[in-house]
Image 1 (spheres, rainbow over the protein chains, first blue to last red):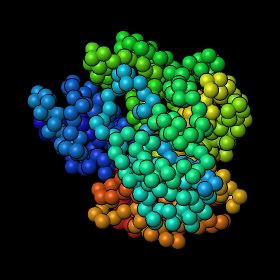
Image 2 (image 1 turned 45 degrees about the vertical axis):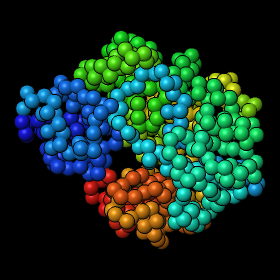
Image 3 (image 1 turned 120 degrees about the vertical axis):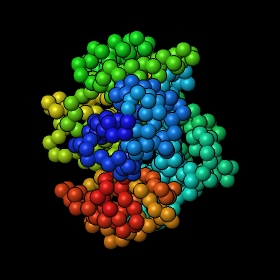
Image 4 (image 1 turned 180 degrees about the vertical axis):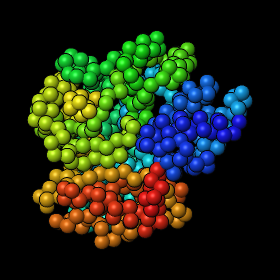
Amino acid sequence: MGEAVEERIKAVLAGVLANGTEPAEIPHDADLVDEYGVDSLQMISFLLGIEDEFDVELDYDNLELDDLRSVRQFGRFVTGLVPAAS
Amino acid sequence: MSGRVRLGTFDAESWWRPADLAALPAVPGGGGAAVAGMDELLAGFCRPGDLLVTRGPMDPALVDGLAEAGVHFGRVDAGTPSGGPVERRLPDPVVAQMGEAEGLVPYAVLPDTVALAERMGWDDLPDLDAVIAVNSKTWSNEVVRRLGLPGAGRVVRTVDDLVAAVSEVDGAAVVKDPYGVSGRAILEVGTPGVLAAVVRVLRKQVEAGKRVELLVQPKFAKRHDFSGHLVVDRGGNWEWLGVQAMTNRGFRHLESGPVPPGLVDEDGYRRALTGVVEAVAETGYFGPIGVDSMLLDDGRVVPVLEVNARHSLGLLTRTLDLRVAHHGLRCHLTQLDLVVGPDRGVADLVRALGAASYRGGEDAGVTVLSGSALTSPGGRVYVAVFCRQGELPLWRDRLRAAVAAAGMSTRGVPDAA
């Protein structure tokens, strides 16, 4: 998986940020909350976008978002949901 | 004591929201701690003699800074109780102290606020059912429809209706919970995949016995958010307080302040709201009202996005604005989401402001309004910038410098500190 999944995640994130940030500008390990200021509303839009992009279903009641703070962490998470995503 | 008690619960909508409503997908948790600490902002409404009751203790640096700015009030805290509105958890000594006041001015009227007022023997609150009705986006949308105002959405009560309503929107749709707190329970649905995810989450709740009530609107091509503020009295008369510009990120408040000259025809806007305010008064509600509105790219105005029959950040900004207007200053209220290092807190930010602090009078400056609970790794603070027209960029720079000098940085602004 690796980079292809992460690039798709960055594209979803850039769309949610909607501030001119290009997907390629987002580092793999950047903290989405501290460095990009992603708030609860943007986070839910991001998660819905992830569902759409990867055709996965997220369990919103049991998400541990503290463990999902970077593109890389999201990449591992999505790959775990759908190994075929790689 | 000659003043009144001010206190409140800022996530009021979640206490008005019927328990049987299905909820839009949301991030677990949310900003509970940040919202709980917002009651410190009520200091900005206080007059000398008022008693401010906050959930937790206020940092003395905040209180001193407010006093320097000319904001004086008595204060007591409820000892940081957890669970539920502060009105529900007031210790007896606090209640005894409140008993010396002339009445209650809450941020919003909740069931617990009514119970508290009854306990104190105060009768200065509007009818709770009216409060709950007026604050629903379903109610305001119905009024907008009835009055023929632009921007009406469609209320849906089934998942299938939601799908149909979203599909009928030309472009992206916005789906709103009737009691969504700012920044939550509002979703942009721009693709079939996102709609499918929302439908899946809702259907699961419907199967568990919940009911659907949501407002669907097109995503408007926005030039600027703004809000109108007024107070309705018991007799249905109302006093216009003015218009505030709002800078939102997505659907969440970031900053409010004076409307840029020429942006809104205030007289025309006020006339457009007349029927809405009359409808509010007919319900029996009295008290402060903020109406969220939008100026579109093509110059048209959507006068009513929602009615907030409670205090609001826009009203706070306007209240502070009126305090300094005679000095030729204007108030800009700004929210800072801060990354905070170990052993740092709001007092460090107040100290770092130094000569940039507002000290009353004609000289511009900054006052920190909230953030007593600010601690590592970070949190939210509100500040008021009092300055002359055109000076805001300069004061933003000074504020950024103070944030950096306090050993903090601003979330989402990597080069801010």
